[in-house]
View 1 (cartoon, rainbow, N blue to C red):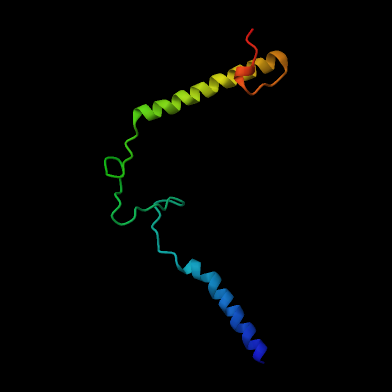
View 2 (tube, rainbow, N blue to C red):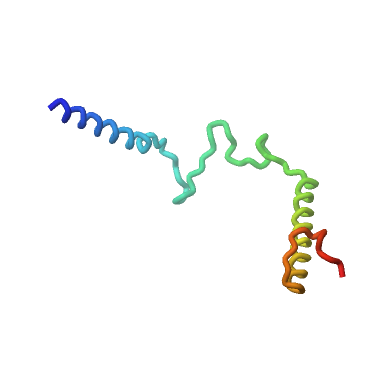
Length: 98
């Protein structure tokens, strides 16, 4: 009888442990299914113009665009050489200039 009580207590503890996270739901209000973001207390509803606005620097954004364009140019050179010769050379500096 003592083993049965222990087993029942263990099963109850496991059940309560698995249900506890579901009970911790704080009642977030969803505007639409899957759109349940709410700002924390003290955090503005709209970020633009607030102290949390990152105010991206146009120079930094231009660096990223230049980097992407340089990558695309390298890829074009690699692909053109591959189509011409059938050999893939990753390092653009090692592609023979003809």
